[in-house]
Image 1 (tube, rainbow, N blue to C red):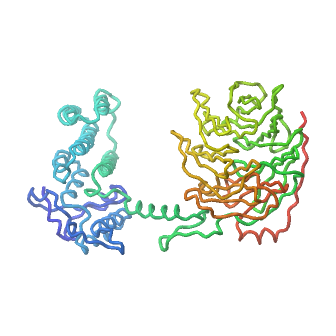
Image 2: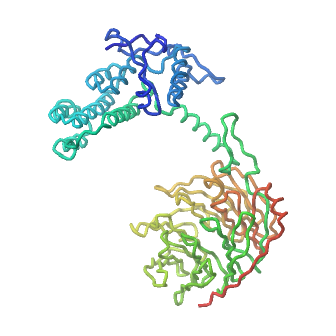
Image 3: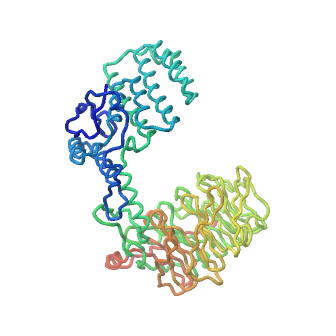
Length: 582
């Protein structure tokens, strides 16, 4: 069994049948070589490799590599003749003759010859050679068992596989196959030869991952490079904010500023005092707001706008925050050092009031399964409650402040709260481990990313810090430009893949930064008082809401939507008053 010189045109080499070609991963091809001397199997540099001929304006793409990757892509796409013609016309073969022989031996089940050939394809790492040999001999072993040649399988295991000293646990597993009647007592089926051929193609794929890419080009290499280029262009585009924005190979990707919600589409005026907090539901179908007027409002979100669903009354003090249940069927509202109320979103009915004699609630949150709620108290403790109001656990000590946010990570393990003026507590309630984010400036608020990996921290010195809380705590980025001197100002993650940071500001503007670069890309005017809170719709990257001391909520969208929205006319608030007394 021999090989031909690499320079022989591809069209003069014998090809495997179309059926055999289809057995290979993604339709890749192998050229059969004609007889030659054993010495021809030794790998030599591919034509033009030594010359380092390059293509492209930057001079960084080696022509040989470029042509080989294109040929690989053509074969993978099923364009067998085109791939062969490219090899012939360029004089650059996809694989060296020895690699072609090796691949053919694998598909034909010539295991002993393929192990020998493996050492002739130019590998220098003995560990790689042994690992590849293991995979080949494992296939040989399994096919012996399929053919009920148990003694041959045992001999292969003892004399060929075991001496490699590779993957001993797998060797023990293979040993168990020999003594397992269920493995080799099955009746041969007509499809067994087809299944074996398919497993050989799978083996070839596994070998391809193991061997250096200079020997066997990985499957999908061209696709990977193109996708990588597109992703890099997308990530470098600071305005990218749309799933519908098609990316084309015909031109470089670039979004315009019109992808950012910067036009006020609606002004909601149902609150009678300053609006302190607002939050979209997880499914983006509702918006909840809370106010100094001692009420909360549930707004329903439509494609054409937002309308009032329920006005929730019953608190005796201003409402500092709200929290949506994981399924968005219920809502918690927290009075300032008062009580927490749980509401049914559909009916607007108050389902329960949580209170603790002598103490006031300052923050609230849900467990990810919706079975418990958490609350921060004004004695600086954190409590966990069943839905019926039974207190399950209470963590005493300096674990929250009178003015505090609260978040629970998606796995339910960590409770996050401001515990000191300049520190945030991450309490692992299962492992009973406490970690702290320490800042140099007083912390006014924070927000957790949807994947629970990042925390956005607002500081007194008019900075917003982005922390990675997965593993070791790490400060990732800082955002500047907004104004804060007296009030609590809140920020949020938002946009497609939460690629943006939005924040309120005391100068009546809404600020938007690109999360990755930290670049300030928008400052939106419109409010006539301090903007206390912002929330980005998690289901619609083009919808942003802001709450202000001017008693209004503004719904921001794309500028090209403003005309169509205005043409539909103002929508009825449809106020539904619900008394939460219980």
